[in-house]
Every structure is written in C-alpha cells, then in structure tokens.
Image (cartoon, rainbow, N blue to C red; front, side):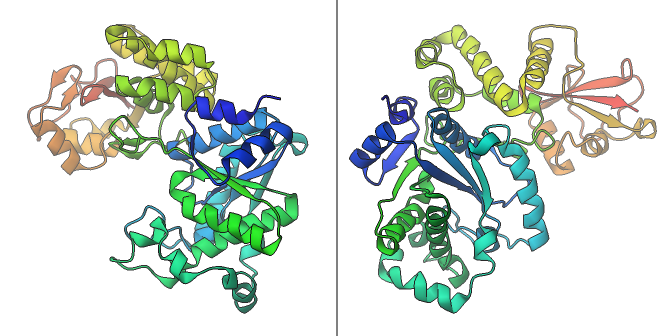
Length: 406
C-alpha cells in the first residue's frame, strides 16, 4: 500500500520526524488517529494554520483519522514558541468566542461526518485539573535542565520567561497523552516551531503508557528569502472573509514572487504534482498564468468557488480592462461625508488603517483616486470625484477599493 508519507514528502510538507522508519512502516500498514492543535488566540485561523489544515486533509484522504484539537485550555496560558514577549492574556469569554469561530472554519477543510474526524477542546480536561496531582503525575517526567535547552524557551531566557508559560510544554505533552488514552491517538503533527513541545508529548506517552508515539513537523510557510509568508499591510492574511476579503486574499497569492509559486502550489492546493511542476517551471510573463491558477485554487479552498470566481472577475476588471467592477472590494460612506478631506473619508471607509498611514502613502506617491495620483494630504473629495456615485481608490501598485455613496 502506498504511503501518504510519500505524498507529504513530495509536496514539501515534512520538516522533521521523531522515528522516520517506524512512521513510514506505520502509515503504510495501518490507519492511524493523529492530531493537530490550534490555540484560539484570535477569532479566525490565518494562512499559517492553513498549511497545517492541508497536511491534515492529505492524511484524511489517505484514510487516517484526524483530531482537530482546539486549545481552549492552553490558550489560558499562551505558547511562548516563537514569541519574544509574553502573549496577551485572554479572558474565558474571549477564548470561548474564538473557539466557536475556529470550529466553523475547520469544517470547511476536514470531513467530520460519520466519525471520519474528531473535533475536541483541551479545556475539557485541562481546566479541571488538580495542580498538585498534575505535577505529581506529569511534572515528574519533565527535566527542567532539558526543558531549558528547548528552542522555544532558550530564546526567551534573556528577556524573561514567566512560570506560567513554562507550564505550556507540560500541558501540550499532557494533551497528547489524554488523546492517546481517549482515542488511541498515536501521532502529533504541527508546525516546526512546535518541535520541542511535540517531543515532550511523544516522550510522555512512551514513559507513562509504555507505548509507541510519534511526531512529524510541517515546514513553515516561508518565501524564497526565508521570511514568513501571510503578512499584508493590514496584518495577517486571515481565513475569515470579514477580516481579509476574498479579493484581497486572491490578490495576495496573485502577487507572490515568481520563486515561490511552485512551493505554494504544492503546499496549498490539491493539484497533481505533475501540473504543479509544469506551472512552477513557467518563466517571465507566463508565470503570471501559474499565479492566477494558484490564487484561484487557494481562494476556492478557503472561500468557496463562487467567491473565487468573483475575486478573479474583480482582478480582471481592474487589471485586464474589464467593465464589471461589482466584485471589487467596496466600502460605503454616507452622503454627508462628501466634501470632507480625503484622509477622513478613507479612514471612515476603512480603506486605510489610520490618517498617519494615509499621509505616508500620499507623501510616497502611493495613493490615487480615479487613476489620478493624490499629492495634497488636505485634498477634499467633492461630488465631482464620485462619478456615478463612486470613486476608485488605488493604494500602492495593486490594491484597489471602491467607495460608494450610500
């Protein structure tokens, strides 16, 4: 039987294994239960989570059972991995709201019907733990000396690491143990920044249960220069269309560097690898066709085919000379704002995050209205600017918004 591991390796997912030979044999011969954890630190997943969801989907398609674990308990502490400072403390109400939002998003990518996958929340077992019992049962298996060598802690020691965060590794290790006991879960998958925490869970199961347990990490989504992808001028590239519009989402992938196209096609779409390699090998102007395929396929997976078609149509209207502007991201302002300063209108319409950002754009020659460059930061938008009741605002080279009078 062919192993899903071959697919994951070919597409570039796998970064590290705990026991490569054993994992390969296991995935070839058995159907296993595995898990990936998602801490609800926001009310939406972002594109960094999407790569983990794709890895999970490939595993499910090969017949393995995923557990999507939402960290309602671990979010009360906060993961120090990859953070230079302590995370913002969330209230129970914030976490509960975020959990509900994330659960809805996960159901787009993973089939939870008929027991094909499990959705669980570690608040179920973490929030009611007796601390003394937990430290006696779990803490005894963790060496402080060894923990301090973990990358997630090492980089924080100079700035300061709270004891609260120091507990995170124990809690994540305990999650794996609990899922092993409840569902027979034998493998954890996750981003490579979670390697230390994942090793802790594998080791804990082997010590406590005297059973094999495994972990594989997924490569982080980085560009050809090694920098994390998924950052926009407005912040993270969210999977929630109210936080990042399908058009902006589409445009992000449409505008990535040529060198990143093949990698993103392999990791973020289900296109066959022969087609991925063909598209990735295109050069010069032809690579734009590959970027259009990438943008459409990723937007379709995240937002559905209808929204992907709208985003594609909007991009073609703006950049291809088409006439249909109905799918361009649109903001509405009240009629009494006409005659106000441009920075007031753009801020009210949430086209720019702040007046300071608007001033910077104008001073750098990066803002246009109706294809006319704006040079005056005190410019007033009058009725003459609102042709047919709307204006077209361009930020930078490729970011467009319509503003319509209500």
